Figure (tube, helix red, strand yellow):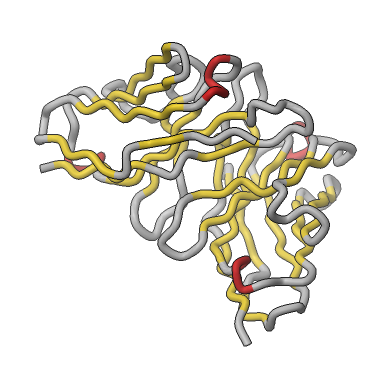
Length: 110
Length: 120
């Protein structure tokens, strides 16, 4: 089975830009999806496909992908963006179908 | 209102069984594949199972295969997770999540979760 790796924590000054990366062989074949989770709450989908935001997600959230690395970018970070962020993808083995989450990145807005 | 509501969690002794439910409302449940995802206290998210829209295909993480069984009743708009032979390491919040339709995978709707504690 495949694994996804994320930096455990990153910090960003209010209004600045932060890139959250996720590495894994699965991204050579499958898209990443990204989830925001605040303490005591369920995860929320913030990005999927190459760069698609669900309805209601601010446009300061964007994404990119290159080789085995997918990125979630927050441009102009706000205090309410402080949360844990998880990437997800299909397992590279493909059969049987399975999914894997990254370990998560804690984003602190200073 | 489009939502998922889990229930059935609680405290259970090791080796015992528990059945979780996830009630869907506000959308056509029978059109969507569904997942269960869990989160141990203070830990990250772990995908555990997927069931197809019609219930004919089921997929499991290695960590739960043979002990946890996913099912659904489309007439009741409800997803289930039968948990047998529970272990302390199964202690977690269990979330049901909807699989978005389309070529790009994503879990686009989540319930609030139900807590399962396995302890003697």
